[in-house]
Image 1 (cartoon, rainbow, N blue to C red):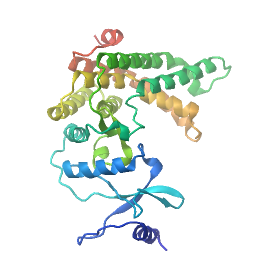
Image 2: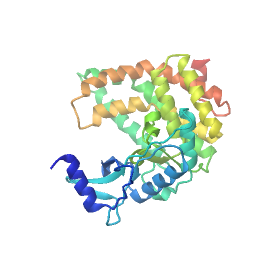
Image 3: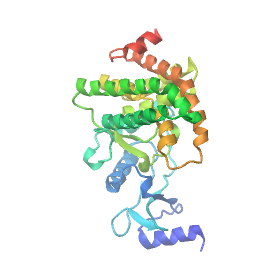
Length: 322
């Protein structure tokens, strides 16, 4: 029996689906462990609501005949997903589309999403830096560090300083704004139009909306040259804020997230703590790219400090960008 026939047999046996007269539904199984959140009921309801109340296309989650959302598929718990139908996107501006998603998903109940980093971000970032700090002390004692480890010894103080600044900045922001804004659905890694068209509930993260904004600006800083990166960032934020203006709290959270050197930290974590070894040699190049992109990152942070002049800025950034 072919793979398509096996899929059809599983669907027929375990699901009740209405197939329209225009043709069969397009289906696929998403492994359950690909979902950031595991409250499939809440995710399915959110996808249903957003599909009906926004112009963006959404993958839909299908309930089994037994009432749940997971089904064992070749030994892997999986969720049956339906591809969205064709939709006419009325606005091709990335910032405006993201704002529409955030507006419509804001106010989700955090109790439905216990995996949310919203209330544990600072502790999580601190733990990650503590682990890298311990690794730095360990490598200092090595007689023959690897090429990657030599680079790590040379740049850790700079990037760990940025991380410490970011963590303290987020702590200060939480004290300045003790009442967080309503939570919105965001994306594990927002990568532009591909994250929005179509929307995939497996990749949603219940967080504050600055998460997606920081991810996109980080990509612009990584890939852009001056002055183009600032021009692109300004256009994106203008489009977003025409629909959903940033409060001072959101702007500060955006700045703090962008200040944390996430690509560097993830590169080091992959080298030191990942079980996979096949691509470790490639991480030498990624480490060098992080050094090369540091100036672009500072330039993006300075741009934000000028655009949102009411937020606080670390003194070193003001000095180096003056």
